[in-house]
Image (cartoon, rainbow, N blue to C red):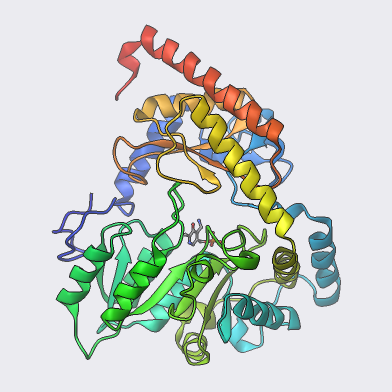
Length: 427
Ligand code: PMP
């Protein structure tokens, strides 16, 4: 845990999981490799990313037909024939790579169209593309702020936000997860007319929680004159009218200064984007080192993202399909007695306290044709380990039924094994 004495976070009044402690992370992963005799993060998707496919194991080259729940492809656009056709056309017309940053001529008409159409959808005048979602957060936060400024982030924010905050050199403060009162306390303590303050949060957090109270947090931030950046990586495309996201859904898109999303999840491509005022986009394009010194998104990738963006805006049926499957999966798991935590979105997370049991279940699921990942401390709180199933519109009800039954069986098998070998648990 990040205690108040943590050197990076100074006198932060709250605790956050220290996902930056490398020794803890390495230890957790090595433990998992030892338990499973293979590295679950070393798996190879032999047939590419999709809802179902052949998964290979980098240790022994085993092949396993699996239902895949571990990618963020909420609509499966990476397999959509129209999207693929548009990407192929761009590949033919523009070649493979841009060879230079967007700031230095690395844009095509496809890049420009994407920025315009994304900005319009989320109700902002302008937008700025980055090569990945990670570098969008990194580049935006470090572009907006300098060492004299303050960044206040929700304690569960993604690594790209933490890293952007660190790179900026600004004073970093955290506020308790989704807690506007704690945010107010932190902001009140840090108020200064000479410093820019940026509050950063996510609209839906990636470990299976519900929607964040974005409107309340924005209101509090604005009472203290702070700028606000909202990361919509896990909401863009399926919350709000035409998939515009939670800021639009909660009616605060105008007050939020920077609306960020990634092109790698709902849009099935790669890239990151920040929508903001003309003035703020100009600031990013002239002051963000990740924008200026990094080659831009390839023509095929941006053409794919643009094609997906256009389908998403017009196709409410796809969104309904994703939500129908999400509700069905949640209902089936709950009926089977699993604790899903507080979430209601497509990231469905049966909770298991015991870490070793969790790794064994992942392995048992894999052998039953179900690919998922375990998330344990230090990524989530101690004792709150969970499986992470990312539901998509391209999963079928049969996939869900098979998976729920497989989890029931896997848990039984693992419980029986642990009962026979009690020394094996809780290490
Ligand atoms: N923000 C959040 C909340 C994320 O979950 C992720 C990806 N896991 C990113 C940013 C980075 O996006 P990308 O992987 O597309 O670079």
